[in-house]
Image (cartoon, rainbow, N blue to C red; front, side, top):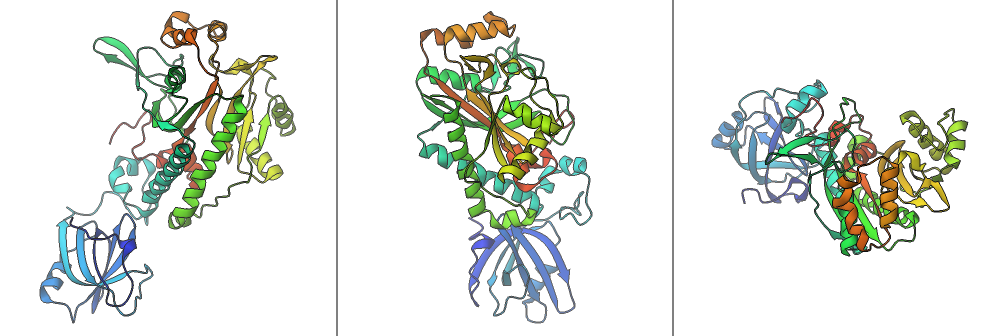
Length: 437
């Protein structure tokens, strides 16, 4: 390997040797010294060129350097580290492994802010910015914490198809494409396939992957391609088992970020608090709260709009001092056919949303596993039963009671770090107007 160690792993004792590799972020050239800031994925170090005591060949190499060059530097730690970066090398060798062709088309360090659209058009360069890199270090640790918890609960990772022969949920928000001369669709949510895995007897599965929605929305809250961490579990008594599972998963994910992303969180001044227990609001009681807050949705026919969602977040924060809370027992009238209803109160669904800082970050609940009920509810929603046979027919042969949820990864990342535009929480975001790079 060309690079021996990460910058964060450098020993800081006087005289310690290091060999690091990274991109030049900044150069400060003074009369007696040249200071070069080198950054890798873990952090930054200052390479100090003392012009009066360095070898001529090393000085010659240093004079060729520009911001955005990639270099490998060998050197020793000085007796006293003076840089604010906390890591410094006196170089004995500098190797230029890649030269930039000139100034960057965007200001990577954000001194002179480029527009979001321009930055996204140069996304690979934009991601060199320390804060932008930090977004995805946090996101990675989020996923690590989720997977760690799911494995501890005996879940197995699975992969379900992205290509569908029929629209997975119906409606118009679906991308259609050609598949060997036939119509195919990109999945809106792989939930129905996860349910089939419950029929198959897999009992506890999760998957991480993309879904697509053809929403013509150019807003800071929408992506046409997003990613989820989704889980499905058999042998549940009610949707409350799903609430318990999801609360444990979120706590594990947030604790992992808190423990292992201290520097990244500091860049965003992110305030993460993990409540001991996530409050649960239930319909029809939610209507009373909404009316108290000045909203008047039609009882049994509507839930709440974006403004009501944010208002509920503020209400829970004030009353329970929690940024997280669940909403349960939604009106069945607004839910899909596969959601289980309360047998004694069929106007309410065993449907659960998880809210964080005033935004829905997941949906789920208990699914209907009884074949006759699935068909009855599909007909009640006006769906073509023949188009559902690929899914419903399997339930003729038995299925355990089950449920699950799907967490929006970009949405959760966005709220943790206080990012205002969800596009900044996707590596290469896809929107109605953005398909490259």
